[in-house]
Image (cartoon, rainbow, N blue to C red; front, side, top):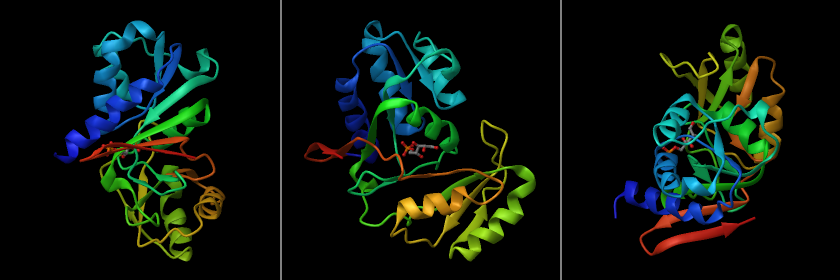
Length: 218
Ligand SMILES: O=C[C@H](O)[C@H](O)[C@H](O)COP(=O)(O)O
């Protein structure tokens, strides 16, 4: 099976976690498969809150109503992909630049179901460059602070998030204490969001592999 087929397998497995109401929907190639699958059961939900303009457009194309998070209460479930996941269901996210809205929608959801192909599973987070969204004028300042933390930040040139901000990708980190690093980076003035989902990890991880979907729970 191709990596994309494995992503699709995990994405479709997440449909079992949809119980109705308004759900949270993430961003990325794995989530695109989920949205397409969601369209087949759209009569079972009232709509979605999305973590990106791209996902909102795809949801609307399928006739699924997209709500503003401010207009709804807590979401029952949030389904999103990841760039890396460890066995404690802590994640690196933001390869597609949607980390800030993803973290907000995840925080507003009772359950976070993460979907990915099995190649995303790692023992130690950090081989995938850790995204950090920053306020534009703070980009260089934040980069210098990140160097002091032992990483090598690289400006994702030419990219602007849905929120109008640049992103720094930190290379060369071995994240042995994800919660502590998330807190440290959050405290740097000018940081909007770090793509470490450790303080609020996923609740369920569905990993697509050749032998089927592996379900890992917290
Ligand atoms: O900003 C993007 C998101 O965090 C994605 O969920 C993540 O990059 C995984 O994307 P994909 O499903 O395309 O591998």
